[in-house]
Length: 219
Image 1 (cartoon, rainbow, N blue to C red):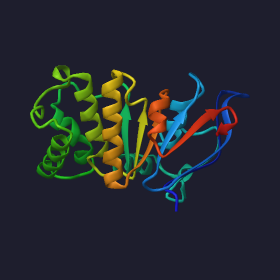
Image 2: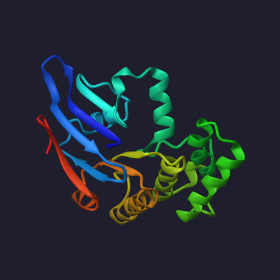
Image 3: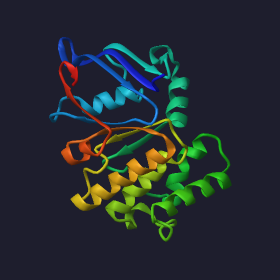
């Protein structure tokens, strides 16, 4: 069974002004997919719809075979906290927390003890080469270090799917390539599905499947 499916999904901000229509998509566990498209075509909106952050104008989104339109607000929140991870271009780290504390946040929200969260978060940050930066605040981290903290935060609670919106857009070419490679390796090791929105052809080629978003859907 697919972990995520979209059936005839469309989205319009104004009546008859559609970003896309009739979009079908299926993501199986452990699959890595890149989504490309022109600026303003709705890539980030589509990612938000997949993650339940936005509701499509038409069509249905299924999570593990269940239609998400029937979910309560609490069910949406619970699914996002336990089964989804997010990586953003702007990192979105909490400035008053250390690298370790930032990574602990998803586990704490999931109800785990502080000690257990710290242990798992520290191990993941060490795997990413940040063992000497555990106590550093985001302002003192380089862009590449901040993004590695963001990767750890997205994966620390072992989600089914990680959604990444231009995750290397704020990094130089060399750092971007190594960071994306780390994200792919971490997801492969955990059999975590990965959906990446990217402008980079090189990034798209590193994924298992690459699709382009048009007004008529994903091709």
